[in-house]
Image 1 (spheres, helix red, strand yellow):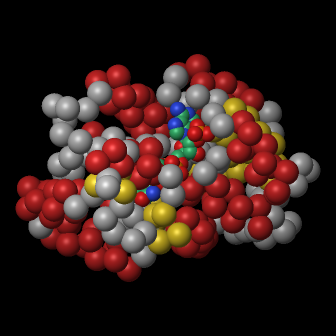
Image 2 (image 1 turned 60 degrees about the horizontal axis):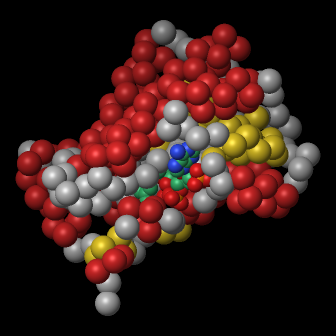
Amino acid sequence: MRFGKNAGHIAVVTGASSGIGKAMARGLARRGCFVILSGRNSAALERLSEELGRDRSIVITADLSTTAGCVSLFEQAKAYSPDILINNAGFGIYGRFTETDAEREAALIDLNVRAMQLLFKLFLEEFEKNRRGYILNVGSIAGFMPGPLMSSYYASKAFVVRQTQGVWLEQLVNGSPVKVSVLCPGPVDTNFNSTAGITGFFRGISAEECADAAIKGMEYELPVIIPSVTAKLIVLGASLTPALVAGVFAYAAQKGKKRIEDKD
Ligand SMILES: NC(=O)c1ccc[n+]([C@@H]2O[C@H](COP(=O)([O-])OP(=O)(O)OC[C@H]3O[C@@H](n4cnc5c(N)ncnc54)[C@H](OP(=O)(O)O)[C@@H]3O)[C@@H](O)[C@H]2O)c1
């Protein structure tokens, strides 16, 4: 994928109101893309659109935890003929599976799995028709191991990783011009932890570092983009270790986190 002032790319970014999505939107806009900013927080999205330039961006608000929200984003975005999707919106839940809220667990699957998969499918079919395009699904290093205390989140990211890898291979054997990648960050300093109700254990990289690595990875059309040396080592370790052993290390990392409500 080539970026550049005259490349004329039009990118849809979900979860653009904060964190990695916001940094991706800024990074793509800097490289000359017109950016379609999506999320639920319209005030934050409008502020970002103002910053990027009203002639260089638009806002489409949508709650992607519903099928109607996903279809509405797709239909509205289609009118702009996008050729890039950054499928980024997602969140985590912290706690023992027996203690977390069932409704919130369902909302996590709706967003991290169902919305990710539906948008992936809708945009990929559209990009195939146009014979061009790039989809970046946002997974996580969590997708490579079991995650005690965040088990649904880790499992949802395993879905993102495996689905993207499967489709990547389909695109390859079919000689498709449409590229797909999965971005697998380790900890990134965003609102992710506060949404999950915890404070971080490891210092994360910045959202800007993460987005820069993601965009470079897209330029090289890497199937799996892991944006830091530490995260690469963790994925390597997890791939060489039996799953349950990797899960013990993940447990140790999660156990070190503090619930915001318990923080003194
Ligand atoms: N931060 C990390 O350590 C880390 C590591 C690996 C992977 N990731 C992944 O990176 C992605 C972005 O997370 P982040 O770290 O940037 O966290 P963040 O700052 O909390 O951003 C999450 C984004 O998702 C959007 N979102 C949440 N619920 C939504 C819904 N129902 N409908 C539409 N949009 C919704 C939010 O927008 P609104 O509130 O405006 O809806 C927000 O823009 C997630 O998929 C996350 O799993 C994060």
